[in-house]
Every structure is written in C-alpha cells, then in structure tokens.
Image 1 (cartoon, rainbow over the protein chains, first blue to last red):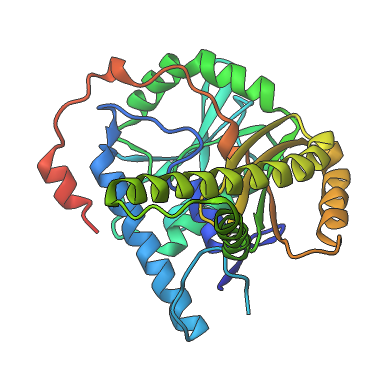
Image 2: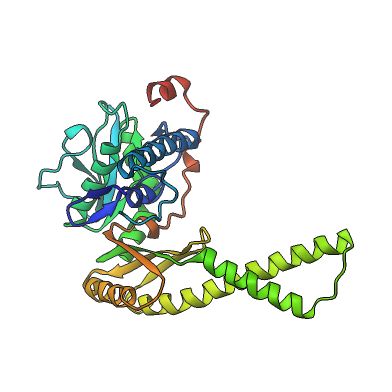
Length: 71
Length: 259
C-alpha cells in the first residue's frame, strides 16, 4: 500500500481520500462552481480509481481491499 | 476570478505564515465577522491530480497548527469573493457553533479487521451440527427454501451479535478518552469496525496509548490508527444551501472542468 507523508504523520492515501473528497464542510448550491453532485462523484471516482491502480502497480498484485495491510 | 476554499477558521485576521495552496498559489483569509475562510485564487486549477488532494489536506493541516479549523470539502470553488461572503453569511451560525464545539479537538480514525470469514464459517459449522442433531428430514422445495433463508438469517444475526460484543469491548476502552464518536460496523465481513473518534488535544497521548495497549493484546484482530486529523467527520451543518437556488449544471462550465 502506498503511504503518503504529511507534516505530522504517515497515513495511507485512502485515509486522506476518505476525508477530503466528500466530508468536512460540504457546500452545495448555485454559488459553487461545478459542484453539482454529478461532477463531484465523477471527480471522486476518477481519483479513487487512479489511486487503486497506482497501489496495484506498487504492490505488484491486485488490490483486493483498502484494508489490506502494507507489505 | 475563481476562489478555491480550504477551511473556515476561528480568526478574522490576516494569515501571517506563508502557506502555498493548489498550484503553488498563496492562501489568504477572507474575514467575515469574527471568523474567516482561507482561500486561494483558483483560476489556474484545471486538471485535478492526486497532488492537488494532498496539497488541500496539507494546507488544512498547516492551518490546524494555529487555528480551530473546519475543513472544506475538496474542490469547492466559488465564482467570486462576493459569493464566498454570501455563503459565509448564510452559514455563519453553523460555522460559529462548530468552531466552538471543535476547539482544541482532533479526529482519529481506527479500523479494526477481524477474521470475519473464519468466524462466519465457524458459526455455519456449528449451525450445521446443531441441525443435524435435531432436524427432521423434509425434502419439500418450499420448506427447504424457507429453512435455508431462515438459516442464513440466523447465521447473519449471530455474526452481527458477535461483532457487537467485540466492538462494545474495544469501543468502551477507546471511549474513555474521547468526546464524540462515529462507528461503522461490518462495512465488510472482515472490517469489523471503522471508527472516527473526536479527541481533545490534551488527551491525544492517552488515546494513542490506549490504542497501543489494545493492539498489543494477543488475538487475531488487526488495528490501524490514523490521525490526528482535522475534524472532517464531526462537522454538523443545519443549512443545506437551498437558498442559493440551485440551477441545472452549466454545460460550458462542466466541460471546462472535465477531467
């Protein structure tokens, strides 16, 4: 599993994605650019798919679950 | 000029430490009453990459060192500064309440993996043995189907009850050091618990020690801890943005932002 380093800790990329993509202060409405739900979902999926592919490549094996422990 | 947003903070002062946001553009605080929203210019944001996501989180974490923060969801862009201020006006009471409630608190994530398939197989085997001892053969298709359904229900129920017992023991231990929590049980057979805990900053060490003690307990559970995080999972908004009169997606804009 790919680890990313932030200032204070090592965390998995998926832990970051789990929070950043659709949690926290989520503002909807016409004032917000391109944040109609369809766009957000699309962005989220593309990034997630990209991350999983990266992890598969790094691990050299199919990625079965985000809960797999780092090897 | 598009405005990219990172976090609401409990300060209406200028940010003195230089912090670079997405595309290396410096962030600044837009004050509203006694709070503020940290933003950067968003014109140059086009293709979204993994680095953008990590940078967003990095900015929020840097802000967290100096302020109470309410992290804004990734890729929240406004058309102009006036729109940001309109949003702040609409959500001010929500933001104020959350900033007060989350002051000096951080979020931790705990995932606990158990051998779910093994446990379920054990329950199935025990059920088969019990049935072999007590059931009377009945080969009618209707009764077989109903029996099969009932057996599955019993197995799932027993599996969930065992998970509940296990989670109660573990959560009780962690909960001594927290102020709020969100628990997700059995998101998959093997993911026993996905938990988010809100912890006072001064109790972080105690919480981590409790985690380490629990992890070192002999057994076949696996533990993952992450944090401290900004409190992504503990922000409660009562407004829903309806006042902004959402319109159909602007096709041109959507195309412009297509990845």
